[in-house]
Length: 312
Image 1 (tube, rainbow, N blue to C red):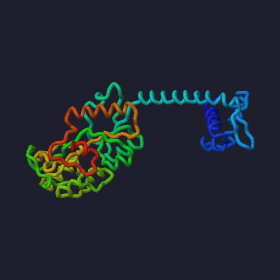
Image 2: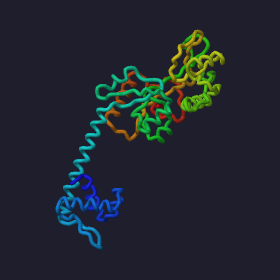
Image 3: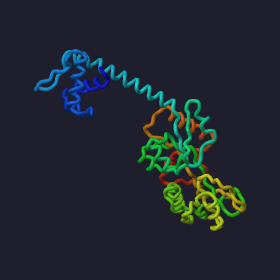
Image 4: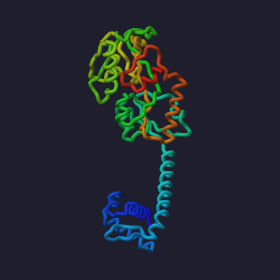
């Protein structure tokens, strides 16, 4: 007597029709009949009465039905417990774009083993990878519509103020947002998220938008653009691997102050305890450092998923 045969038996017993049971099980009618006959032969008793009027359970069939359901429930429960245990023992895969909190693994240990993915990719790509299941979590930027369309939950970890880089020395004197130049790159595969943010910000504050095609949103090419433009240029949240050259400095941007929100993303239907632990641990860590508190006079894109939370 096999579990498969018991599943077939229960389906026929509940449908009292071989054709409907076969469709429910996604097998052919003859194959289903052969398995029921094999089960009856193994048990030494007929389980169904078959005639022109239909299919009925025999006394032996009625006796088997409750036991079969219990056996299948036990087997399914055992399978689910093994699956959960295996998932709990496996490290969760986390992707990121350019920023991670210091000591991230220690924050969630020992309850969760976290494997930080080596592929540093743009926000929209990391969101896709979480949605398709090749990542469990990601720290990235996302819009509310995109999160909903991909079935993702987004938890605010850091509302990062973006400064301007300009020819001069670093100072705390703010530069008005309307006087900032904003760069947008032609390569949408790499800069789709930044471009949406940059265009909306520039349009909102009346800042100058400059289109580039050399990846100069970050790195040495960015600093070259700042020198060429000879004015404050909004810095992207992409971490610079190149040191700030002599003669260039940072200034905060004000009226309004642009914020870039880093979200911890996971699939909305992923209710694993490990995922919940990572979310709760990072949210608590972020609150303790004031990362989720917005400074006065802030700005976010209209479709940022965290606008309501920052307004309260």
